[in-house]
Length: 168
Ligand SMILES: CC(C)(COP(=O)(O)OP(=O)(O)OC[C@H]1O[C@@H](n2cnc3c(N)ncnc32)[C@H](O)[C@@H]1OP(=O)(O)O)[C@@H](O)C(=O)NCCC(=O)NCCS
Image 1: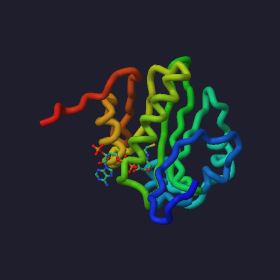
Image 2 (image 1 turned 45 degrees about the horizontal axis):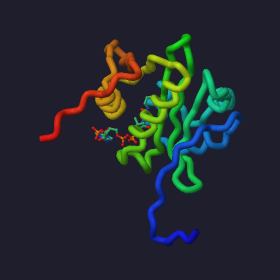
Image 3 (image 1 turned 135 degrees about the vertical axis):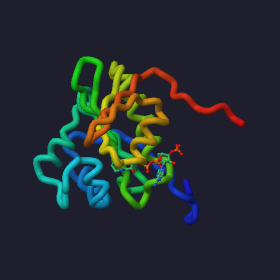
Image 4 (image 1 turned 90 degrees about the vertical axis):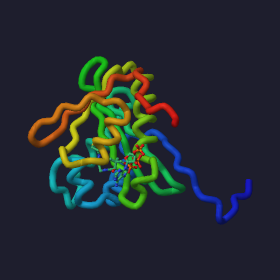
């Protein structure tokens, strides 16, 4: 098949392979210091080896990560970690260069579908109170949010169709 040179690449979402630390590192490298703070709730100039290992230690059941790729480049990762029989915690990040283009939203929807397949009924997460983009994303998906002084605790019941305004 011939691919025209000016044809834009479409993002593809795939599952992270167990032990693929290079992809974890590649996405981390593309995050700004503020995004790293938002993702890890800590200042993180580098990704500590133990954290990188943990993030790559997926098992396809209780610990699942989905990677967004644009051509050869990993531009986002979303994950869930099961914390109860039907409850999992999620987190996601999109490299700064590609934010604001719907990648985060697509990744969240892919995670929701993947989690549903795995019998998960509720996704929970924590977002720093000033992280307006993540809060907007969560609200638009119909998440329940509970504000505390530092973080917002969120919960998303799966199988519930998000509310959208009727077309004008
Ligand atoms: C949160 C994050 C994953 C969103 O990814 P993204 O690819 O930029 O998100 P999208 O482009 O899909 O946008 C999601 C929504 O936010 C809105 N949005 C995106 N960037 C925005 C900005 N800079 N200002 C205001 N709204 C914005 C979009 O319009 C969209 O809303 P809509 O569907 O009503 O139009 C990304 O900003 C990120 O990696 N942040 C750092 C890590 C983080 O905060 N993770 C969440 C906690 S674990």
